[in-house]
Length: 267
Length: 107
Image (tube, rainbow over all chains, first blue to last red; front, side):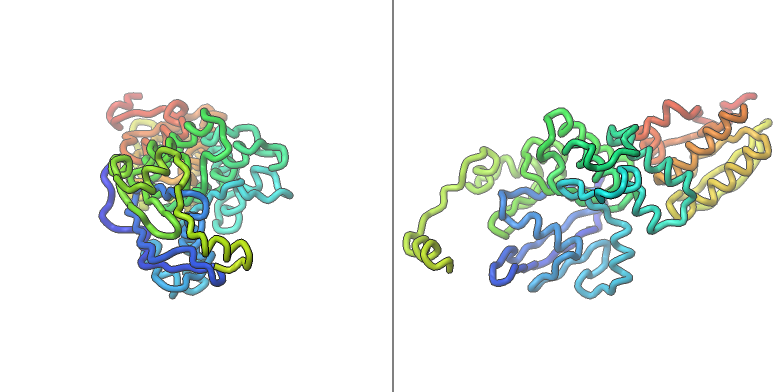
């Protein structure tokens, strides 16, 4: 697979806060067209926050975010709507509407954004259900599906418009090993056949090593390293090795600060 | 995307050029169904096609099914690259008759 030279995502010097608390610090993150990029890091490392910024769901404190050449901080509502039609997002729990059938959920973007014939829309929906191994589940309600099925249904909806850019939050979390491997295969196939750029947030190492062209490791809101699977594996950085070898972090305890946090709730 | 219609033996040939996507697949659908409704079998020539999205694939499925139900055929010619991969991804390469060259169609 030869990657294009131009970046479809360009995040520069991104700083983000939730209230007083700084979540991202000076994050640079760029992804080339057709690339599969995995964002890894422990809980609270800022992975989901970075994702939400790229979806223009959060406003940064400072820095710039460009997606498909659109500057998200300067874009108007119309530009953002247009951009969102080229992006697919699969959230952790599937995020389907509970009052609609699985099929209705999946075809929703097509009904909203296209003028396609109903026959075409129905077949497109079933093609995606087949792809996700969900054939025959079209008329069920989301509450009748298992967690893994909900995730696949969410992915079906995310790719129903054949997006150029797919964001996938924790694809294999909570799945049985066989389903998780199938989902990895599917991610690779989507890229190869539809030339999608795919950004996956995960802490499943096996999955990351299998699908990633490059991995970005976040730690406490900062990019520790971006590199190929081999580069990440060979990194001498202790935080990366801890992540790879599943070692708990060994933080130095500042006794005074610790007591202050416990007694006052302030840092 | 552009398309052209020619004839090969007793078939109508619909040649697709460029990219078939959400915006132009309704045109392809109209052309294909019009050919089939006139009672001709159709060869869809992919040789100049660089990309086809799932609305295009869905269109081919609908047209293929119409052909089948009316004792006609729909055959894909010269699928390579990304369009071939999409057909493989959806397993439709095992459903649609696929031929490498237009000249391989003899009768």
